[in-house]
Length: 447
Figure 1 (tube, rainbow, N blue to C red):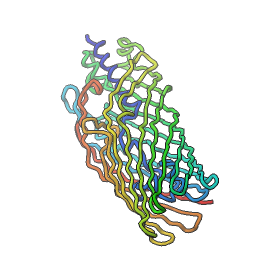
Figure 2 (figure 1 turned 90 degrees about the vertical axis):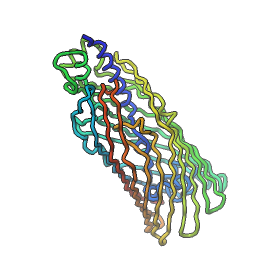
Figure 3 (figure 1 turned 30 degrees about the horizontal axis):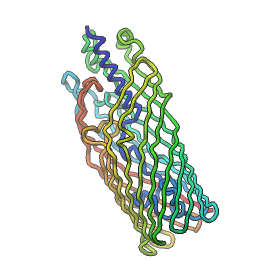
Figure 4 (figure 1 turned 30 degrees about the vertical axis):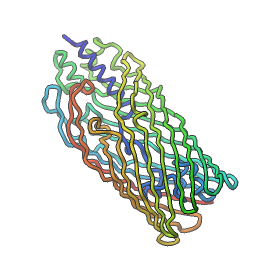
């Protein structure tokens, strides 16, 4: 029999899958969250680093704290509704149709909180504290779905605690910087088709899909990053913000890889590949990308204000290659990614309806870092268009409430995954119906 050689291919498969799981192979806006402000959401985050009166500016451009009045606190809560429904077919290595359902709705409704505190230090300096979630996503498919060998669950969260300071050189020029501690958690899983590998080795009693196992990866890490920025005002009605957020390198040293192997297959695996496919620790380095933002705000008159933003995110250098190092006999894995750098562009406006009510609107183009050749099932992402609306209510000088809503317009992305050693020859072809909406609310209180 050829059990040893075939199991070596299975080992390579499992390591490759674990590599994908360890980094949370998810994409773009689903991965990079902008939802840190209800006021900003209402205008598609145009003016995120230059607009007046939104404490969330300290997380984007610390120099923008010049636009905040006095000591204040702000709390924001966004609810992201993401739907991803697959339709298509899979093929076993033998060419026969793959068994399983469509996975149900793999999307979710997730809360994204944010909080801010701002305090002036004298007449020219500012201090701020922020709590935000700049990255995160979750998809979860039904057990036994047709694409189970490519992905089951993907759950990733990054939470930042930031400390910002800025200095106003004069009423027209300010500079600022912040340092943040980022906590990252990852949990991901998918099935392993041990039945195919053992059937190819002519082990009696096994056939493709007859001995599904499962691999679950979990890990967490704390890392430090920074943001710098400047705010420049050619006149009292025009403000230009320029900011840069550093990449953040997470070295996960205490990750856990859990293999769920069917009893019948475990006996063969233990004999042919001792020390492999066993629960073990793991190490991996995951780098979250750097980004640069140019933001402009102009007060047209007492009622109208227009804004624009351009953000460039450096995905290609952050997600180029990831190496997974296991604590067991499982060999290391080196994964190559094909992420491209992305651009987010938005335009928005505020209209002051009265002394207490402000209406908002905005549009945006949001590019995905994935391409048709590299899209997978973990987050079937695609570029999207934003349409946003919002309203603000200021019942008193000290209190302000804001509400925002965004609908994402998307094309239905294709997913074409060839049968390779990474999925034991199980291919998947189909299309996703992807939909997204975001609703947010906030309060701001000035002491």
